[in-house]
Length: 563
Image: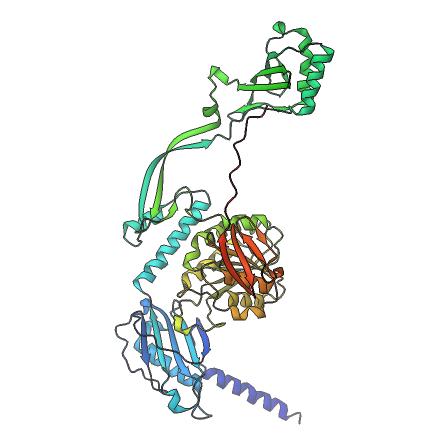
């Protein structure tokens, strides 16, 4: 018995080796998909169909006109049904791919092409299966796709540079010059006014009722004087207050200095970052209605310069401001900021410092690029400093998979990384962006979340950054997610997609907008209403209905000068 065991082990090892030797050299970017039936979509000039016999390996059509560099994805479609138990689907697929390689040698080893093996499960006999499509579906990069892949990266770089405080538009300008983008650049000369942060007016605070009453009591009781005074004072570089000319000031009011220096808060002015003295004209008026005090502060500039409040507080300059607009005239970006894109990512992450050890699932399709630039800049500043979120997954809805092949839960285009290094995070994000732009409207948000959670089961919360205008195609998978989702919705300035409201209510998570963090959606009862960013929503039988926009409150009255 003991002598047989080594022999069995040798035979098993040989068998494993033999089987592994028969496995074809599969593409590195290969995704396996299972679906009932693939419907051929006619009329799409960028999708080519190359049918084969049900159990054959020879294409019926030729491929001479197709260039490998123009291909985005190749899908091999077959049926699971077998005529015989000994039938080997893997071998047949390998033969089909070898034939395709022979027709187009540039395909083998091409890492830029996404391969899909699509197994159809809907037919159970040869006659039915013959009506199913079998063969290759080749999705070509359209001219728009190829331009878009270059343009979107240039836009992403531009947006990022703007959020980092720059205005470098060389990439955009060069793309416009060679005609690869449909934008034009419109510039205007503006006179800009900017706060001069090196200059600062002196502060002279503390005329509250207590100090006013103290001064009134001193003047009326101790000095028996109820007249009005105009006192010329000076505030030195150290903040001390004294009379500008003590010889001309009545001796009895000098005691006021004790009150000014001891009971009031004041600090000296600054000019070009250096402390300077300030002249103070103090008007004390004792009326029948009470004591009134008014001050005029005038910084004393060096070298006899004349003080002007406007030139002291502001820097004025002429600046050329450029705006990129599309063919309809709609603005997309400015050199002084990004038009119509709120600082959503910055504000939500800055406000929610309690988020730690979360999975951050982010939509990286084209419509998200201005927000992705904010994502990059924020993590560039915080990832290595104080952020404790190191699990990221980016999703692009299928790596350019044809829309008719997308099956809920199997769409792909997912890029997970666990890192505390910004360069690694950025490269993973760029790879996800360049590998696919989304295709149809819906995205695979929840598929991405489940993939990220499987990569790190210890995660307790999910931060999802999603496009408000793209409803997840896989809401049916929500029940599998057992942790709360913290949803940041991009592009929701005109109202939140109610499908997302329902998703968060069921999940028990929260929604985060520019101004609010909403944790109570799961507690709403039938008929109850909630106002989010001025828009009212009502919960009716498990569904949210968008109501009318709540009118904004009237603007507050202009502030009056305090004395």
